[in-house]
Amino acid sequence: MPFDFTQLATILVCPESKSLLVIDEQSLICLDPDCRLNYEIRDGIPIMLVEEARQLSFADWGAIMKKQGRDPVSGEDPEGTDAALREEPEPSEES
Image (cartoon, rainbow, N blue to C red; front, side, top):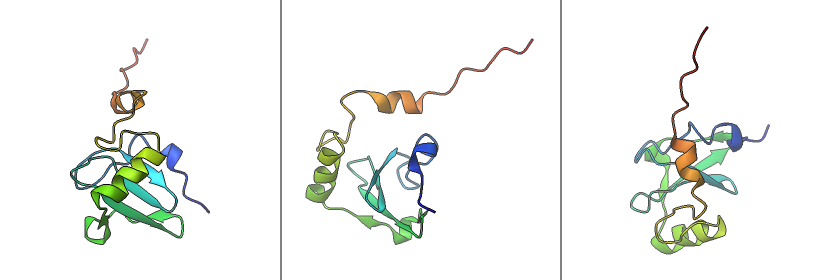
């Protein structure tokens, strides 16, 4: 069964920097340019251990960010959707 990142995109973060992640082929990539960790997905399971992650070079990380439609220096989403992902849902009023 393939890993479905869309269902976990709002809750799964980099264990090192607590930044959001993007999926790139068979890896989850930390959006923090200082961290740049690459977490491999094996048999449909993301291996979210810092000890097993690989730090990408600035050039490799920037290329992935560019491919993802993000700023290749900051990793920011020019459309601003990252902020919406981080927002806490407002509590619902119970009757």
